[in-house]
Length: 314
Image (tube, rainbow, N blue to C red; front, side, top):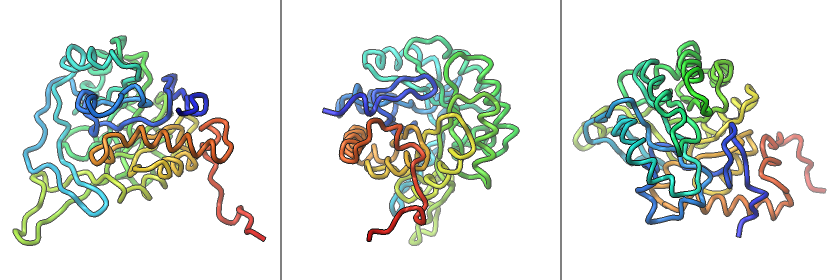
């Protein structure tokens, strides 16, 4: 049994049994995994991206496997916010786990309408504002690569909801610290990062792109070093909690993100390989804390040291 006191956290006012969440786009709306794992053991569920109206997404092929990861160009296919409120959230409410809705839009107005619609809805603990998906032709990543546009959409969301607002930042930028500060300055209660890196894949035999969209978002263990670096930089730049995402498959991976400055983490692509990954990571994190004598997971946050500061054994 895990030490509950060691793992309990509050991120932007959202209380969680542990700091291990499941990432948007990799866990559906929970029902898809409900028969495989006990959802009550998760820190939080971040839903698939949700728009004001249903989105069809991109044409197939939409997924390509890569060394140590995968490319996806799903295009944020979803049934819209009304389906979420009327069908998906009532089912999720039977579980004792916070639900954070990932919000997508093609314009500031669309983001605002989803946030407004979800404000006060039972079962919604927070809003993750997706300004970083690289797989749609309009919106999302456009807001995540311009600090002015990022501040505009975050500020607009902040004004229409009492829920915690958590922008999900893009790695496809030159200065992640600048983007993190822009989000914080506009009223973000926390930030999550990173979303996928923009990439492509080609079939040499047919001499064609593997994705119908040509480009897609790269995720999985291959992006972990980039994600870890950006989480460290963002955590240095802001005072709000940072949620680390990117290539986390083991408890050791998660611990590295806490040491870099993350206050919580999300497990994404690993869910496709092992539906129980998040639960196993939480268990491994607890074992690490006990083994090293830490009283709480918060003691790890930002505790990384430079190699020169570590005394060599005598």
